[in-house]
Length: 474
Image 1 (cartoon, rainbow, N blue to C red):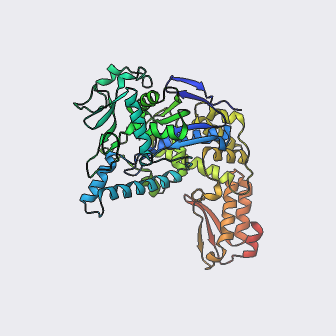
Image 2: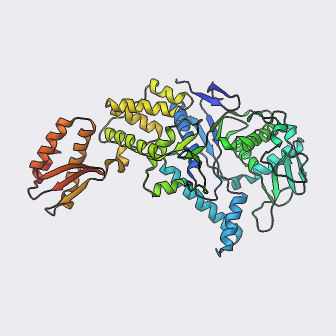
Image 3: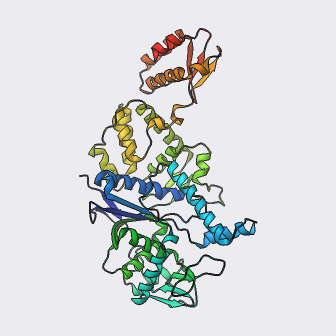
C-alpha cells in the first residue's frame, strides 16, 4: 500500500498518515457560510480536499472513507442579506427570507463545485440541523467550568485550556494584541469567545437554558464533527485564514468537552489565492466568483487544472497565462484519450507524487510526460484519479468543427464530416503528419477541403462531395 505523507499544521512536520481505523478513515473540512456566491478563493479548499478525498478512497477503498463538509446557514452575514432583501421590498418574514437565501445559495454552491469536478462529501450537515447538539456541548462546557453565562451570552474561558494557541504557535497573551476578538464588557478575558448569543425577535433563534438565541460560529463545527465523526477522527482541513481563531477555538472547546478524545489528529491548511499577483479584492476590480468564470466560457476542468498547478501550501496566483496553459494541456490530454481507450491503473511511481503531501504539480508533470509519449490509457486513469471527466463527456477541447456547405448538404452529413475532422486532428496531435496529409488528400477526392483554424478543424463541403467516398475514410 502506498504511504501517504501529510504536513500536519499542529506539529509543523510532514508525517506518515496512519488512520485511527483503516476501515473507517474520517475527514472534516470547514464549508461555506451560505450568504452569497462562492468566489474563486472559496473554491480552492474544495478542490484541494477533493483531491485528498479521492486519494484516500483510492488507497483505502471508497467504502472506507467518510468526508464531512458543513454548511453554515446561521450567521450574521446571512441575516444582514435577508434584511437587505426585506428592505428592498421582498415579500415574507425575515425568517422566510433567510431560509430562501440559504437554500438558494447552497444550490448555487453545489452547481459551481460540481462544475469544478468536486465530489459531493458523504455528509453535508447544515448548522441549523444540529442546534440541539450545540446546546448540549455548551451546557457540558459550563458544567466543567470551561464556559460561563454573562448577559444572555455563553462564553468559553480560553485560559481554562492550557494548550490554547498550539495550532497557530502563539501564546494567549501574544494573541490579544491585534487579535480578531469582540470587545465586550461582560467578558472575563478579552480572548474569551462566544458559544451562544441572544437573538432579537426578528433574528433566527432557538430556545436554550440561557434564553432564546443562536450559536456562535466556532461551536457549530465542533458539534457537527463530533456527531458525525466521533470524539476522535483523522483529518481536519480548511483554508489558512481559518487557523486562528476558528480552528484554534474548535480544538479548545472540543478538547474540553470531550477530554478523552483526540479530536482531529492531522490538520491541513491550504494557502490563499491571488489574481495576477495581487490579493483578490473588489476595490482592485479583480474579485470574481466561480460562476463569473464559468459564464465567461472558462470550463470547470480548466479552473480545476489551474488550482492543481500549485501546491496547496503555497499561495496560488490565478493568471490568464496559467489559464491558457491549462487549457492547452487539457486539450492535448482529452484528444489523446478520446475514443475507445482502455483505462490503465496509475502506477505507484506516479501515485507517490500525490501521496507526498498532495504534490499535484508533480503528478501533473508525470501525467504530461506520459501524454507526450502517447500513453493514452495511463493518462486516462490519472485524469480520473485527479477528478477530470472522460473525453466523451467534454466538447470544448474538440474546438468547434466548422462546416461550410456549398452543396447545401452539411446538416445531413454532419456526423460523418465531424468524425473525419476528429480523425484528422487526432493524427496531427499524435504528430503523424504524413498520415494526416494522406487523409486530407483523400478527403479532397471525396469533396471536402480541410483546414486548421484557431477554433479547431474546419471542413468545406464542395459540389463534388461524395458521401460514399467519405464513409470509406472514417
